[in-house]
Image (cartoon, rainbow, N blue to C red; front, side, top):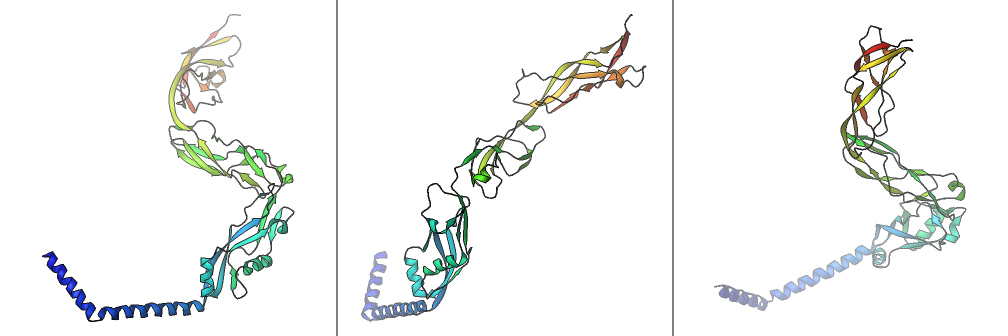
Length: 328
């Protein structure tokens, strides 16, 4: 059945060709194409406007020169001209502006004035084109011929850990040295560079942060950003018995405490080895007695606490005591 339908379709098409309809369709298509070409040519003869990027190339830069701020890679311009001219330009190589370093560099600056830049750009498009620079209308770039100076980096942080966690140690970076480029006078005044502030709250896990270096006017830094590792780990509760030391006991008297040692609970980073000694000092000061008839004396932890201890508390805050007077 499908063969019969195909045969009918072929016969219908052959009949259509014999009637001349196929020829009429071809003529119509040719006229449409010709009309479209004429319309396109007429339209291209009109004045049109388009945006173009002009590439900037600084030529003849000595090997000893380092730009402090990078020259612009492109200049954005708006061009009005005949459509055929602009179309032809699109199929040609991209517009490129060549600026001679030797001609415009002086005293640490490469400067191209607005008038000079406008003249350069207009020369790329011919006298019949109307050209308007829409980006910066001049070029001003700092440079130096002084060698780089290496300086350390200081990490600026404002960090808190989540409950039960601790920032164990200072933030670290593998970038120990930053190369800085500037004039010799400025280089002599710089001994280090700093990061922008790293602000984090309630950190629960270690984190690596990409942070930019704080800019200094007239100075180029390499690299301009570094990775900073913030060490965060859980806190672990530990306990230790500490003997109580008596203070300011009058001469001829001896204060005996019951008990003479008390338990101290403290928090330390989990990575701290068990065998690391954690020295505490617990004292009972005779001067803290409110009355000679008191039966208990208050205890207190001496300060400051060891650096690796997050917090410490006494299991009991007072002990019983008795005063023994020594025989003369």
